[in-house]
Length: 221
Length: 232
Image (cartoon, rainbow over all chains, first blue to last red; front, side, top):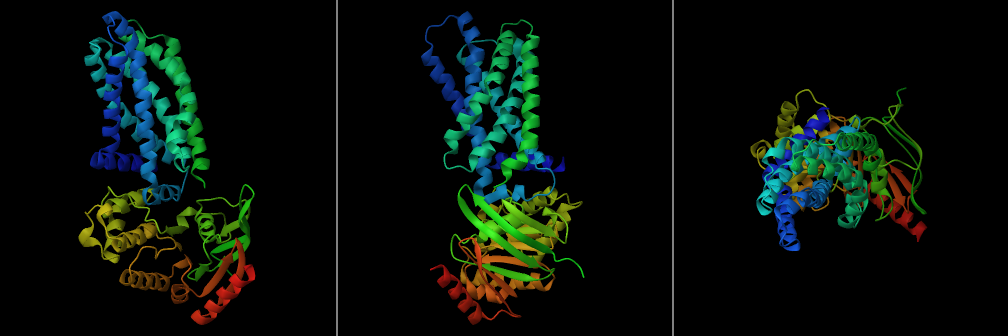
């Protein structure tokens, strides 16, 4: 557990000083909002309300891809990933530290992105906030669990920018299914379907366990 | 009689159809220094990374003091520094200490910074360090958990001559303090200054072994040339 906390501290303090990951993800998310704005002209408010969860999650997923790639690329500088792999004990804690740091940074970007989308599409997200936060939080656990594991696999290859989306996007289909449905219910002010939350919790659990146990093999050369 | 600190038996490493290492046997006693020499692609770094626990051998056994592999007993210094540029020198050492579960990583960091002459720059970010300073910090990083074996993978890469001399002197003093050293290099003169034994690798196999106290540079150079001629 101490290893996970040490890595969480290291990742957050490094990002606070460099601010490269969060800024890159935020700029990308703003650009996505602009692209969607031009791609969907003349929509009525109720149409936009129905589309917002899907658009939001599209932006979330692609911004997360950027952040996850960068998160592991930083570990390649000075061969720092080897430094982590040399640490004694279960390497699953290394995964947990990296994944938690990714979750915090991506969640921060997601909160700002939701605000930007609310302004762009004139959707009042304030009443939906508690439900939306729950669904987004759960969905992001799945993204970060699978994403941290797969980014670590992809980062040592010569084409990591291509490999990570190819590996990760199929793994996120169930996350997207639960998250978009749950987010839509939250935005429309109805209760979030239990099946959506159940799907997210089960997928999160499976990805966390697989990644925790599999990280040892992924870090081996 | 106590077991050697490190024992390798029949270590092989294959990547698909390529054999990077083929049947390496090696023993290293506590406090002993060995140089692992060979041309590029000989398998030196692969061997060191297997000893470090960064890679698994395809076959063969590796023991520490007669027991199983233990990452706590190994310090690793490569040509990359393993440091985080956004963290200060002190923060890098504290972070490493926390990875190894030290009870008081801050005190250990301060002690190592003093030993490496880096106290004055403890608060500066490692990303702004010269290559020589970064290498000294890297030595401190490798020693955070007081390992009994230090693995050195081409530690002279990128160092100017004064910094290289300082590194040699520092490694000699670490050896005198009782650390076992395994040094991967292709520089015969530096190997002769630091090691009591040399293992010469070529194309993944042992092509020669030389021993002496100290190692004779001329004899080592001849053995190295013979080993490479055999391959040619």
